[in-house]
Length: 114
Length: 114
Image 1 (cartoon, rainbow over the protein chains, first blue to last red):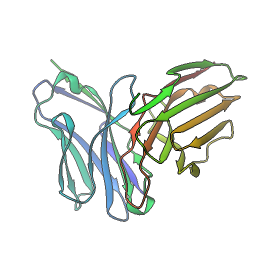
Image 2: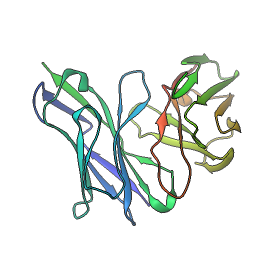
Image 3: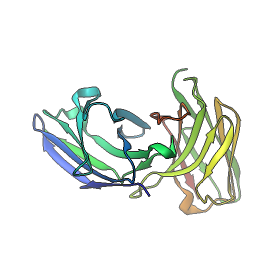
């Protein structure tokens, strides 16, 4: 069965600092992986997705994530945090044979300090 | 309207009431989903519809009754709910096929059961 673990329910960074949000997955077959962001009182917005092309995936708002099969990880990074990045971030996995069924991690709330 | 819309955005209902949540997608997708998002819990997939047919029911109590009259509309009928059903209910849509496609989310309906 697929599962996702997001390390750290809360992450706090200073404005301009590196953002690193951790995601590890469990999957019996090559997965599809996604990062979503949720701002207060809104739905989830897709940041980026990995579908077995390049292992380094670039997304919107300056975010990127690297798929590392040996570590079963898909960590999200951004070189320089902005105040507007404060939100909750979700990692999700889907195994190819399950088609469009996603399993989400518990989420990480990112706080950006001025 | 663009994307995925949900109405109402907020709903307060007593345990004996009957109400319905509505979701509409304007993206030409053919799969639709209901998720429940409770505080401090991972996003829970409730139902999946592909081409108007229900393909997933994640052991959801019968007091939640989904309806998908066409690929663009999805409803969640609610009756005799419990206070623990208070949550954010998110609708999503995607393409459906042999590959895995990203899901697009609506803004959600904040449900409070009194």
